[in-house]
Image 1 (cartoon, rainbow, N blue to C red):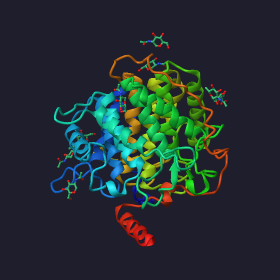
Image 2 (cartoon, protein in one colour; image 1 turned 90 degrees about the vertical axis):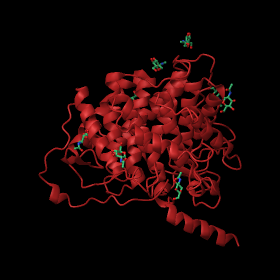
Image 3 (spheres, rainbow, N blue to C red; image 1 turned 120 degrees about the vertical axis):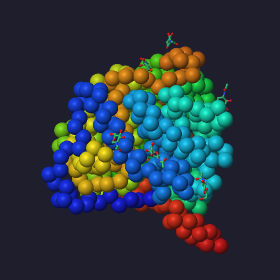
Image 4 (cartoon, rainbow, N blue to C red; image 1 turned 135 degrees about the vertical axis):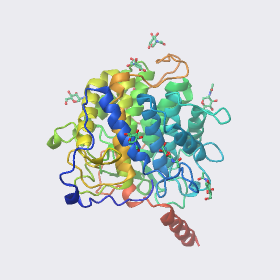
Length: 453
Ligand SMILES: *[C@@H]1O[C@H](CO)[C@@H](O)[C@H](O)[C@H]1NC(C)=O
Ligand SMILES: *[C@@H]1O[C@H](CO)[C@@H](O)[C@H](O)[C@H]1NC(C)=O
Ligand SMILES: *[C@@H]1O[C@H](CO)[C@@H](O)[C@H](O)[C@H]1NC(C)=O
Ligand SMILES: *[C@@H]1O[C@H](CO)[C@@H](O)[C@H](O)[C@H]1NC(C)=O
Ligand SMILES: *[C@@H]1O[C@H](CO)[C@@H](O)[C@H](O)[C@H]1NC(C)=O
Ligand SMILES: *[C@@H]1O[C@H](CO)[C@@H](O)[C@H](O)[C@H]1NC(C)=O
Ligand SMILES: *[C@@H]1O[C@H](CO)[C@@H](O)[C@H](O)[C@H]1NC(C)=O
Ligand SMILES: *[C@@H]1O[C@H](CO)[C@@H](O)[C@H](O)[C@H]1NC(C)=O
């Protein structure tokens, strides 16, 4: 992931007393659509990449965020019926595709992490599942997602820790020796969604494999997910900062595998365990227990740009789980509703100049920036699933594909590192510490090159 943004609260006092910007009736579909439209409009107002002389789809300093933007906006289009942004979505999605149709465009490819590429591939996957329009001159959305899958499995690393995908792609990148749960969780999610969409066994085999590796390293028996493991110590210790964005992709992936296997017990217990842990950790009872909070950074107002928009990704993952594992909806929807009600109260400004806060459990907290508007858009849009109930489609049109099997084993491999998942060391979040933006990365590349001499 990319650069750390400054999201410190500003001038809260100036805004005190401003009227509620988003009035939300959580029981009313039109009211939620209005809220989503307002948040979407204000998200786009921060998007300059489609202006003359700019690069479509490229958000300066945070390339991955473009993938998250389009993923959210495709969902917004699908659930709200508002197609007014589709020109910008299609332009950006195709522009950033890159020479090999795999979201590794040459301008950025030398400093991307696997997670950056995955975020974009999942937008393509969403486009496939929701039937977002394709250009006949271009590869299909599912082909694009498959291209990224094939890139990433070729990077599966068995030199240490019994497997796993490294955080970074290139050896000169800081974080190359780290195997992060986000990187592996995103590939797990992509595999599971491709498995359900295509009925191709290769994808479910990989979902099984990544899950097995993950539960032997970054996910422990109590369903806590650790941020990362380090190849330097054979992945024996794990960094224990808890981030909701590490849970979302694993929740989505297990829900898809649950669906694909027609409700296999192992996937159900994994999904239940992850949901339980997520609820207990990220929906603090001190805020009523129904509002998502990125607890590692919100109380200290120390969230970076990634942390803020990734919270919207977590929300989308929960909404997907409620659709493909419908038995979870009665637990998940109240969490999405409580968060949306809270988020609406966190917004300020005029209808067409709205800012929603980073923290959804308090009044407007002074945040301003595209990332918090994007998360709010994800959140309001996610609440629309309870009305349409339209689930992601698959190529066969059949929701359960009996030809595809999955072991669903959640007990880890003997080749994995032993007992590391439970171990903790006080280590800071790699996404905060090691993540560097384009400029710093060039410096890191140079520094890396120098140190090799
Ligand atoms: C105001 O925002 C709404 C979305 O909430 C949008 O549809 C409308 O076009 C905007 N109006 C103006 C004048 O920008
Ligand atoms: C860029 O796209 C947004 C979202 O659809 C739109 O509101 C805006 O008018 C577009 N700007 C230009 C210059 O095309
Ligand atoms: C790459 O950079 C060039 C020069 O700035 C620009 O014209 C082009 O649109 C960029 N391509 C992508 C995919 O960002
Ligand atoms: C299944 O997916 C893999 C990975 O993309 C691909 O190599 C293989 O050709 C696919 N198999 C079929 C039958 O389509
Ligand atoms: C989830 O939590 C509930 C109650 O808090 C408990 O009854 C249930 O066994 C838990 N499920 C899993 C899979 O941990
Ligand atoms: C799989 O998802 C579909 C919706 O796409 C749903 O109707 C079906 O009940 C799900 N299967 C299981 C086992 O929950
Ligand atoms: C779904 O799977 C079950 C067995 O797991 C099977 O009996 C049923 O026919 C399948 N349904 C479809 C539509 O494939
Ligand atoms: C691991 O799980 C698989 C399938 O769930 C089972 O067959 C196997 O016996 C388990 N192995 C261990 C060591 O528990």
